[in-house]
Amino acid sequence: QVQLVESGGGLVEAGGSLRLSCVASGRTFSRGTMAWFRQAPGKERGFVAAVTWNSDRTYYADSVKGRFTISRDNTKMYLQMNSLKPEDTAVYYCAATPVYTSSYQLPKTFNSWGQGTQVTVSS
Image (cartoon, rainbow, N blue to C red; front, side, top):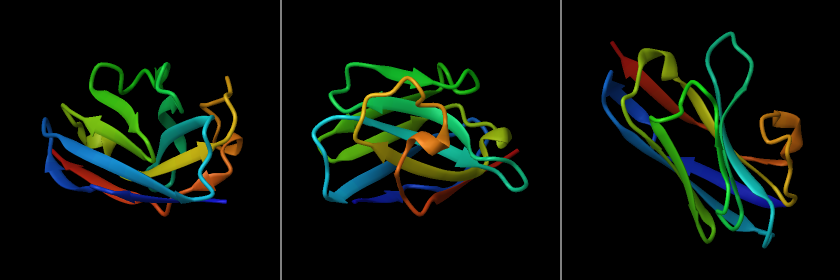
């Protein structure tokens, strides 16, 4: 099992930026897909962005395209969030699976999850 730990959340004003990090440890794998999801109060966990293990492909939800950038470096994954909006407020989770998948938008695809980090964007 892979252990994932997120960090970098916080409170920021609308239009500001944050950079989230996710560190993987334990039985890490040499292939697969990592992703960021988010969950706001009263809402289901939703897809934000994904990256393949060798970083050759990235995917984004329409709501964050052009504002967020996902990247990966060895056992770390990052989410650079710019031009933040109040609707980006949520708990952000990183997730991993040892397979390449076209179902990267579905939470059930991933078998390893972090504990989440809170992002709050004030208007």
